[in-house]
Image (cartoon, rainbow, N blue to C red; front, side, top):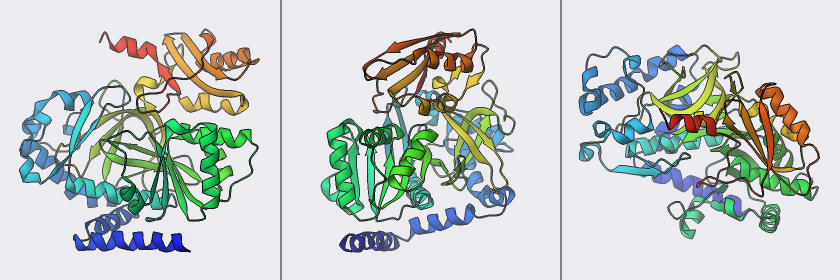
Length: 442
């Protein structure tokens, strides 16, 4: 009861503070709810028209990069840009920061190791907060409840004890997930009856599930209200195991640091509900800046409607996905988000292979601790395997991989003690060294 009371105090205090500052976050949450409840894409586009025009007009007026587009007719007249173009082009950097108010600088080395810095206005930060509240609620999380935040906590991200208490965040580090610490964590969760939510890397949650599998655990009674996976692909296997152990549906969130929450899975389906209220999203061909057919894979290109400090107009995220329409949803949804283009594998005939096609076979190999599929050449592949003891099903796994990649594929297994982590402590399920090597000569 005491914890529930404290959570309620946090909830009320947040909205009182927002009201004292003009109620900006509450207004944005209401706007998102209204936008995403409209009956058709046409209605939504009419509502967003003024916001999109404001963004494009400001870009043309304030940024030299866009000056030549003064007589633009639509968003499609604007060029597609990417991280390298933004980083290397001074004409896209903010020139009059005082006019926009205080700017927030955000910096990341990213999954590719390429440093990247962007600026956001306070207006954009407020919108991101509202997006977070809306989509967390969609997953079952209530503002003020305890958040089990499992990620890499470096010096820049670490929260002080007071801030963590006020926000009711329990920071859990992915580097501290050995069996003993997981055991202590599970015991803590079962003793704590307050409502809680997970926000975590799926690979880290998989470690927790592996531990629970190993001790033959039954479903836990720890009052988990929401489970959100972030930053990595979510396999159906991990999703179902988390649902089993924590008795709540798990969803995957698609977001990036430079924009915010772009889409999130529905609790009872695999497709992603797009955040059309704050972004315009296109799926473009890999070789040309033209839309692909409904349901086809392409580049995920984002126009951020709320950041005027550094306009991200038709920004190529580097991710691959497919958009489609459904009878259940009035707006197009992301049928799939495949991750970084550089991590996509290709068959021996040059056709893209979804990582989830490979993931779907892993439940049949419970003895594997870790696995990574690597393409080393046009028709050559390596399966990196981390397993305790001997693995007697290597030929079976190789044949499954050949069946996906091509009968003429050269597939071999390589046994390792650990699949290497990125600097962000995320682990790649697939890696395409052939593509990486090819790009060095472009």
